Image 1: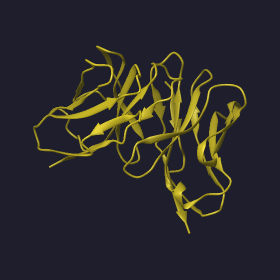
Image 2: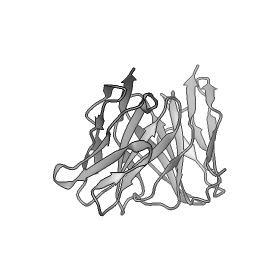
Image 3: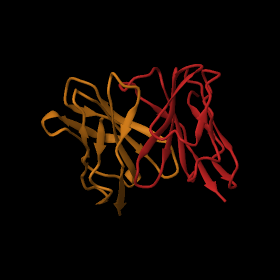
Length: 113
Length: 114
């Protein structure tokens, strides 16, 4: 069965600093990978997704993620964090033969002024 | 505007009551999903539907029921058999079924047991 691990439950970062959120997955074939963001009390919004091709994927709000097959990772990055980036971030993996996404436990990002 | 609506935003349930959460989408999507979100546990799939009049159990279906009589609607009933229903419930939809499809989420319903 596929699984997704986000090792960091909370991350605190200063405004203007860089941010990296870790995501590791367990799946035999090439997965479909997603990053979503959730503001407090809201639904999830897609930041970016990876299916194939270039392993560096650009998303909305200045985020990017890199797929590393050898490390089974899909880490999310942003060069300079804004206060509005404070939210919870979820990594998810899907498989073509399946009908669902499996989500990680999420990483809550706090932004210090 | 196209999107997914969930109502109500907050819902209170007494012990032993069934309650129904509404989910409507006007995106013309075939597939719809219900997730439960608890702090620190991410999202867990309750039920999903690939097409009208069809649905399958997810990972935590016990104590829940659904129907899919119309393409745009996928209501979730939390029955009295669900022993710990307090949670945030999210509905999502995608163009079709499959793990490669992007899922679009509604704003959620927070259910509280009194």
